[in-house]
Every structure is written in structure tokens, then in C-alpha cells.
Length: 146
Image (cartoon, rainbow, N blue to C red; front, top):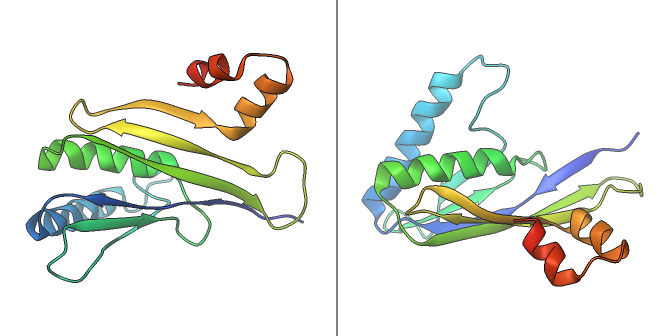
């Protein structure tokens, strides 16, 4: 039997230690609100403060290989609204497997416009490779996946 994993590790500078505290409080409240839910919106990741108590950087990473990129995106968009964050932010994911399996490895990347509060693009290496091998222009393939 094979085990499948989604990995990621990324940081977000929220601007101040006070905003880090607000982010931790928000995530704690959201977790509490979702307690007992069969399909929680804000799961599949861990979040901690980087660089000690005076830092303004949040570190997001998968939770023991069971990462949920959509959960991170939902939380960061909610956080951007709560803390009035602006600019672009993004992260990469890696899809892996404990055994060699076809279609079990790959990855992707997501880009978020924090000010507009929306995802502006993403790409999957599996979809990109499939389209490229089917003779589609690589530039067109990248644009198509956004």
C-alpha cells in the first residue's frame, strides 16, 4: 500500500508582531468554530511565528505530509481581510508518494493578490506536462492553467 503526501513550507510577513498575535488568535478562533466538523475549511497546515516573539513573519507548512494548499489559501485570504494585508504572496507544493507509482509525483504553485483578496493564478506540474506532451505550446499551457 502506498501513502500519498502533499508538502509545502512558506512564510508570510504580516508587518508587525502584533499582527502575528492577531493571526494566531484568528486561527485559534477558526479552529474552535470548526471543532467537530467533517470538512473543516482551515486545516491541513501548521502555522508558527518565525524569529521569536518580536518577529513579523508567519511560517506555514504541511502537517506531517497531509498538507492542504486550499486550506492555507482560504486562511491567508481571510487573514488578508482581517489585517488589511496587501501585495502578492505565493507558495509551492510538492506531491509525493511512499512508493513508486504513476501519476503520484508532481507539484504546483499558487499566487495570491492579498489586496484584492483573491487567487490570481496557479499551475500544476502534472497538467503542464500532460498538455506539453500533447503538443501544446508551453507558454500557452502556462497561461491556460491560471
